Structure formats: structure tokens, C-alpha cells
Image 1 (tube, helix red, strand yellow):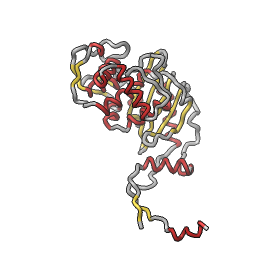
Image 2: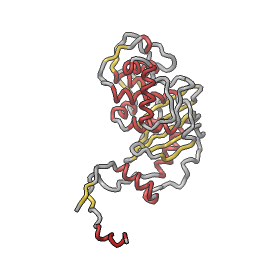
Image 3: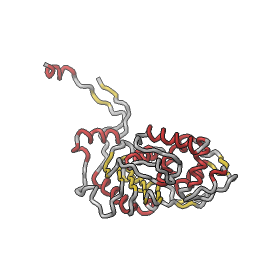
Image 4: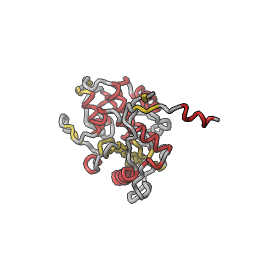
Length: 294
């Protein structure tokens, strides 16, 4: 008799075996990931996207401000919930928001998709507020949804009060929580398309994320900076069949440190396919093991 196992991703299978049988993890690198040439960040994490396996963390559970990397959560919620081709009229509250901006004007019309590109490529705080109001009717209501959604994705040590990341004592995350949020977001093809775009010609917006232009395999996700949060960067990178996310918070050399962490993770880990989806396995012969029960 043969038993058909349900379809599973190769990632999940490989990670399960690696957890119980470390020899199958294919640790190829000789250098520890924590060895640093660049300045170490206040909080750091590297995670494999589809399994959620933590490959590295340093102060990963420390609560820290995260500046505009907040917008990863904002964008992920909007991508999942809204019609991206729907037209949105910029409300008065969405114009003139402090900090980075694409200079929206009240009364202008944009599609949700355009606002998402302005949010993630140019870090528009005005786009963040406009999208929050479109989704939930108020920034406060959207923040409630941000906290609910983040917790459901495994980010249980974070709290959000706004959609853009401007300073607020009650607005914080951890490197591990932010990695979990980014891992969830990067599994969405539409989100990946937006954050991997180097140049959005429709509005002549270039992506501020320099990793897309300098790091092999980089395909997202978001930069951030405030005086309080310091330099923050969440990076997605894919080499072969392995998609990683790195997070550095309050990182003086955020690009260099991110590249260092990702290089080490790609060097140390290999993702293996242990069996194909819908593989059939013969059920064990009960008679063969009957003697073992005596």
C-alpha cells in the first residue's frame, strides 16, 4: 500500500530535516556570521522567507524604533486588502505630511498602485497617510489593523501607532519581528514586484534602496532613517532557490552590514529539496516491526 503525502514546499521539508538532523543543513561557510568588518547594528536578524527559520540574530528581540521600514507593514496590508487599480483622491490630511514625501496635493487622483510605488520607492509619508485613510478611514483605525495583522504574522513584540514610522515612543519593533513581517510580505508576488522595482517610469520615481543596484540577488525591501531610529534597512535577496531577508536597525553602515550578513548566510546555508511535492511513499510493513514491540 502506498500513502500519498500532501503537497509541501521544498523549503519546509528541508528546514524540518535540518532542525532534526543538522548534517543535512549543508553549512558551507567556515566564518561565523557574526564576524563583522562593518559596524554591528543595535538589532539584527537574517531569516529564510518561506520557512521563517532564523539564520542569525544579534539583539533580535530588543525593542527599537524602525523609521520608514514601518512601511513594509503598511504596504503589505494594502496589497492584500485593496484593489490596486482603484483611484484615490488625496485627502487634505494626506498632503504636506512631514518628512520624506512625493509632494501629493489635496484633490489629486492616484491609483492605489501608484501610491504604493510612491510609498516603497520614494518613502512618501504622504502616500502612507493617504493609503491608511483609504483603507481604514483614519490613521488611528489603520494602526489598530497594523497591530492586529503584525501579531497574526508572528510579530508579537512590536507596536505601531502610524503608517509611516515618524517618531513616537509607542511605535517600535524588534529585528526579529520586522523580519517576520518582511518574510510574510515577500511571499506576495505583487509586493515583491513593487519593492524590487528600480525605477517607476509612470511617475519618474527611482528607488532609494541602493542594495537593488549594488548587491547580487537583491530584490527589496525598504530603507528608513530618523535621528531617533538611526539608519535602518530591510533587505530581500535571492540566490538560487533561497530567498532571505535581513534586518538591521540603528546601523551606521547599514548597506555594508546588510551585505555582510547576507553574504555569510548564503555562504553557510544551502536550501535542499528532499523530495518533490506529491511524492508517494510506501507505508511501513507493520509485520516487520511487530517484534520490536515485545
